[in-house]
Image 1 (cartoon, one colour):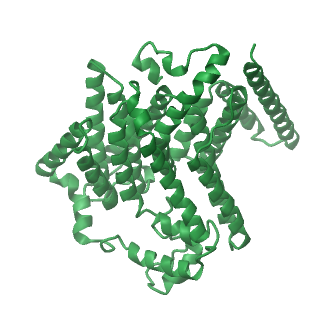
Image 2: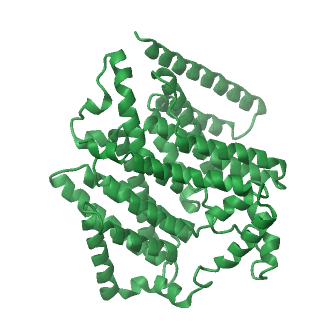
Image 3: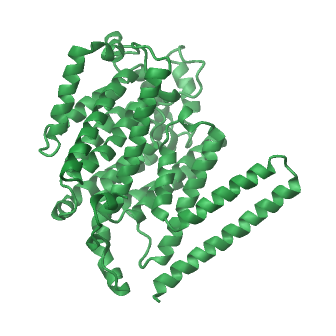
Length: 481
């Protein structure tokens, strides 16, 4: 038995022992407290403990569950916020624990890359800004959010090692996309929606809803690239249906940024041979709807015609106030998480319309980062995005050289990235949204898979097992599972 396998089993048994000891302590504490809800809590912990033990043996599944829960947009989709927070944080910890146990049993060190290290550097700089942050509660909340993002990114970097793993990640995105579409359809038909109003799906912010549809689109397009024969036809039809839902969903939501982003995405698809079909079909659907059912575009048309809030939706005042704040605190910022609070006096000096709002962000991710962490924090943040883009460009040759990797990936992801950035660049409070992490992972995927394939043969030869990319699945469906 190899040392790696022994180390993996030792790590798993150690994790199980620590978990059981902690569970025993909690049970004893509940019994001594004599809380009337103790039986329900014990049942819940028993179920969570059982699921945790199962996920220990399936670290990538644990990671995907954590990603799915964190991706759920704020609103009624989360049902009870307290329960959701416990479930989401528990899933993140389970993914971290399972991933750590797997890494300890796998030959070779834990994988890092420039993007992940830059995220960690930003968190460390955020900790430093606690020294001058006036509201430590908001600062800690923002740091927890960034830490969760770092854990999600670190776990996926160490587990996305093959195209089969990318299949599963895309399947998670597809499931999230279809869930949002189903909720939108339910809201339209059973939620009392009236055409002409902005579609608010389960109390989800309209701009976030559009961003999420764009982010999950690759998950629906990917099976088309990985299929052949009749299954490819079925997947293509489903992708067109989803594309239609994206067009209608963004238009009914009244999000001007998301609608323009989807239009730009369709135009971008025209320039790629492998994506041209989606571009042509999408623009044709757009034209047909505009002629046959123009009332579906009434909401977005009114928003553009009225120029509500000006050309940039009233964000110019927020941006100008943010620049004035940054001018006063260029080096340090006002402290992570404290941007909206510090912005209010500057905004009040320019307009009285938002005096009742103390939580207004800059509505521009780069400005939000700059006023909270200063120019140094902004430099790190820009470097995070740039490192992912450079990685995507650098590993194009390795991706296209592999027969297993669809070349159309390099036609889809740039369009998705540009469309996402166009809608995201005007958004508020989304400088660390999980949808941005998805875009980063999609950009990093070629480098993660190519690096794993370059390193894995040495480790696999030591264990006598064939490399993962040479172990052919029985079918494409099995590979995606």
